[in-house]
Length: 325
Image (cartoon, rainbow, N blue to C red; front, side, top):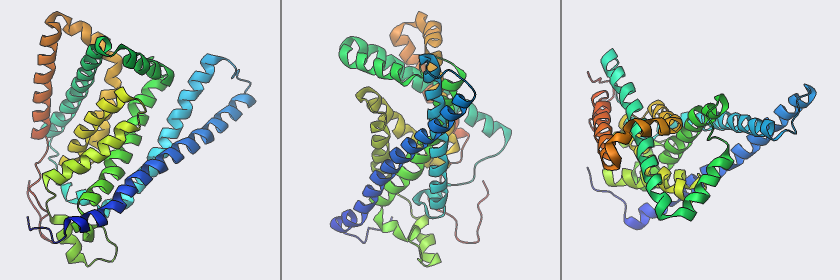
């Protein structure tokens, strides 16, 4: 890659506003989620009151609260999806949107790989949390209390919708869509012709076609993963959400498409309801044996996903050319 024309101070100067944009996007999320939650709550409670539903019952209120959360998630996800779509034509990650094999075997590989990876990630998190119970009992007690307070630990239709659908839609469009794009612009200010309005077409094309160095991608990926972790609100979730956020960022970077992230994120979350059953099935292996099996399955699934996608060649073809893949 050609050496950067910008000095380090110039890169910092041009990149800093995009770091502020990341923080602004988080603020927009907090504002949108809060306002949409209140709007949905007002609507549902008004309808319930007119229908004569007893909303004083704690169980009913808890169920309503989950529906409020789900409505807020969908509304916020829609707004972030529209934001992401507006950014799409000028994304740094635009060149990652290579062609994917569409034959049945490749599609099956991707789906099976994402299902296996989701279960493996959730089980590895469960193993780590189990070990932490004896090492950090007070921290884990606070974590368990916060999870119970969220109201999503019991398996039901609304908890599955909140955890398995609403959360992936919102968090992927926001974190791997908007936040990762802004973080990439912060660490790659030399690429600004790719997103700057009014830039000549050939200059914009060259900027999009440049390969982002791995070190810069992982720096940007770390920024969005850190914000993703902090949004979970407690130290335990922040730590493992940061690691999962890194994996989800890398998954997005392979294809430039969010739907695979949403699928994997959804499987990870839904698999939390099957942890006890999987623990029981693998209990005979012992803890070390279980970890070995999970790691082996995870490596197999990652390779299967790689085989079901097309590796990025490094740059877009020249204007007017196509690539057969």
